[in-house]
Image (tube, rainbow, N blue to C red):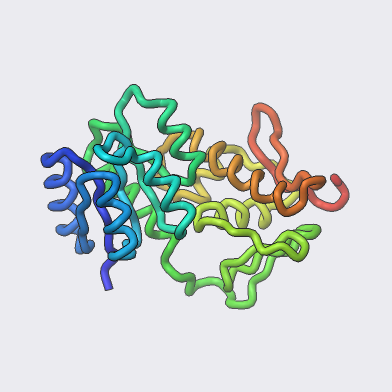
Length: 232
């Protein structure tokens, strides 16, 4: 079945353009024109991806993102105005997977859609028994589960992928560019701040599970690494 994409925007030209191009690429398309309708459609239609404008009537996109993140792990690409930098950062910290700044090219957006959906397709090429163990952290790739000690971490797909990549390279510093390449895709040309936002979300959840353990550390001017036993 083709992936189902929910477009949330109140500008008819944007809706028409996105709908036309997504359908041409064989995606199913569902439309919502305000924040409240977005929540209804997301719950009823269970889309595989949501393209969410932040400036919406009745309920703004940030609040929609916040509510949806509490309910399920659906990938979200935000559409933002060029001068809405603060909103972009807040949206990423709330759980959005990516953002595109208006005005945008169709080619750019379609590439972002493809990259985000790539992460939610079930794995077939990796060993079904692959498990990564780093100190008290267990990353079960087949089950798409991660535990810190006995605590099951409630992670989005994007957060899981970030954790998996860092765990696979435990003890090694990965630059933001390397993380973009391995988590978002080799042809991703996005903002490095998306990496920082996802790492921040991950750290919050890891600290809730183990308050006295620093699992991911920042190497100033370089990037991030996951600590190994001899570094703790």
